[in-house]
Each structure stands twice: as structure tokens, then as C-alpha cells.
Length: 138
Image (tube, rainbow, N blue to C red; front, top):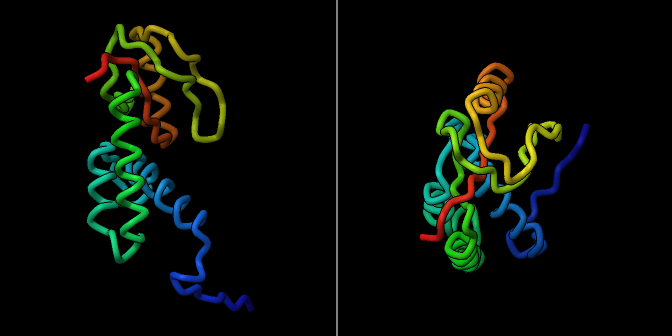
């Protein structure tokens, strides 16, 4: 039998709290929390709504500010699901399966066969892929 010790908030290491926020931010977008994929704005809203209960308010506020700067400065943070891909879009980074297999390398211009393969893999294998596409700064 395993006995788990429940840590009080002040006993949880700061690094663990930060990792939990970042992990949940990504997991919310992938659909691992509510079984539905969400945008980065919805993931941020989820964190903000749970400040003070699931997450430390100060850390969520700082994480939110950092993400705002990153989203503003990264030219490619158009995060799309496989079903949203269109011909001519350019991959911003390498695309891997959830198991770490390389599908496509960054800077590839998507064509119909590539999109079909990504969509099939996403649907048939249950891969919840989020694809970063290059775009212009907003």
C-alpha cells in the first residue's frame, strides 16, 4: 500500500508550481484537461479563472505576462489543429507525433498530401497534434 503525503501550498517547491502552470497551459490546448482542444487564449483564460484555487495568483499573472510577450514577438505562433491546415502554410518548427517520431521538418510548405497525412494520423491514431505555422506579426 502506498501512502501519499499531501503537501500544503507553502511546502510545494516554486519550480513545481511553475511547471504545473506551464504543463496545464499546454495540456488545456491539447485537450488533455477537458477532452477538447482549446486556443492559447482559452488556455490563458482557464489559468486566470483558476488563480487562487489551483494556481498561485502571482505566478499565473507572471506567466500570463511572459506569454503575452512571447505571443507578440514570435512571428509563427499561429497554433492550429490538423483540421485547420491549408495548402501553402509553412511549418514554424519540426512536427513530431506524441511518441516523438518526426513527421515533417520546419520551413516545409504544406501541400495536400502532407495535410491529408497529418489529418489522417491525427484522426485515426488519436494524435492530438498542434501545429505551429509561420505567419506575420500582429
